Amino acid sequence: MRKSLFANSILIALIILENLFLFYFYKNGLLSQGKNAISLFLSSLLFGIVLVYKFYNANISDEQYGPPKNKAFYATLLFFSAGLVLLGVGYYFVLAKHPVSAHESDIIPLIQVICRRFMAGEYPYRVINDFGYPLQATYLPLQWMPFTVAELFHMDYRWVAFAVWCIAALWVYARSQKINNRMLSVLMLLLLLGANCILLPDSNNRIIWATVEIMIAGYYMLLISGLNQENAIIQGIFISCCLLSRYSLILWLPLYAFILFFSGKRKLLLGSATTVLVMVLVFYVLPFMSKDWALFYKSYKYYDKAALHEWTYLNYDGFPSQLYEGTGYAYYFYTRFTNLDIMERIKLMQKVHLVTCLAVIAVMAAWYWFNRKKINYKIFLLASFKIYLAFFLFLIQVPYVYLMITGSFVSIAIFCEQARYKVYAAGIQATKPIY
Image 1 (cartoon, helix red, strand yellow):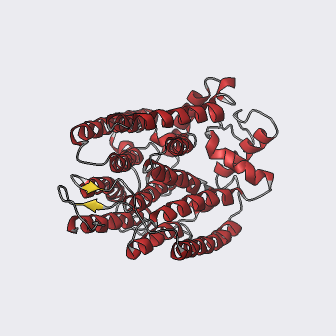
Image 2 (cartoon, one colour; image 1 turned 120 degrees about the vertical axis):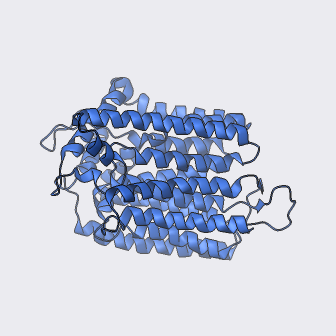
Image 3 (cartoon, rainbow, N blue to C red; image 1 turned 30 degrees about the horizontal axis):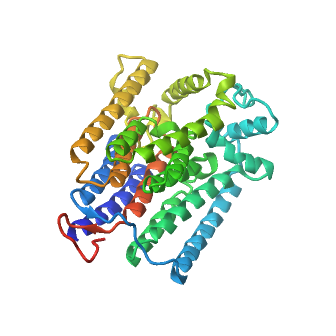
């Protein structure tokens, strides 16, 4: 019991630290770029390691548990929904203050052009020249398709992003109410709503009004809930939502397949893989890629051009703005390899990024092979994804702050999901669960 309580306390502390490193310490001058970036990475990495520690060599119930869906359950969901409404009021004032403008950010205007082309029956992935400079339409389908709803009803696109996050948050929170611990239930509510409230102040709200990343965070929260279920269709759909919006998880998928295969969940793996294949074909390959088989490659290569722009766009201190936001290790490659030109430094970082992520995947696969009888495969799916994501975001070539919020919400979703299990000391048939 002490181990479980200790682990839960550390997990909560690490979630808080992730958000402090992301939104407070560097921005308020308390830590340097390097120290803050490494601290953010370590807090994210340790979250996955502590999760493994909590469940390693412990017996956990195969049956996820909880009280019946009674009046108290629905009252709790109603209370959480009221919190979402209040959060929406905060969003309203932020969005009213910052109308969509291509002069501020081309992210949402670019999505608008793609949606309008698609709804007019045009090929949406033609080069875009609407902003005075050529832009390759790089966004994958599920990063822009949901916004066709906003285009149809003449809504502010950013409300769709918020709505997707609200659905994911409500879903994760509803699943978390399968526990019999009111303190943890309240903590989960505070973590989910609080992590979004952090985006409301002026220093952070650009993430709300200039990007749609809160929607991507919602996708990844749904992914976490899907990994903790033995439903091939659900897993496949949620993996596809992430894969067809941002392909951050693509290098982790072989480990996902490895874990399911060697844990004896081969039917689940086959069903999930089939679902993903069908969705990728239906939403990307057949309608868009079949008209330009180089589409994915063009989109991928365009990120080189975007990275070059960010690595050469200097702030008042003479440093690249997006490399000095307290996140990521790109600044190290920028400052240390001055014998290489900028593009060569970017290419070096890309290689280090790829090799490191693959090495981390290989190490985790080997660890699971030797310890697969000592840890539940669902727990290791969650932990391994968090560990992988920590490395992926730390070594990404342009560490935009808005990209990092996905890692924060993944931690919260994992915390909610792992709390659903009854945990017993190894070798003991306990009559009372250790929470």
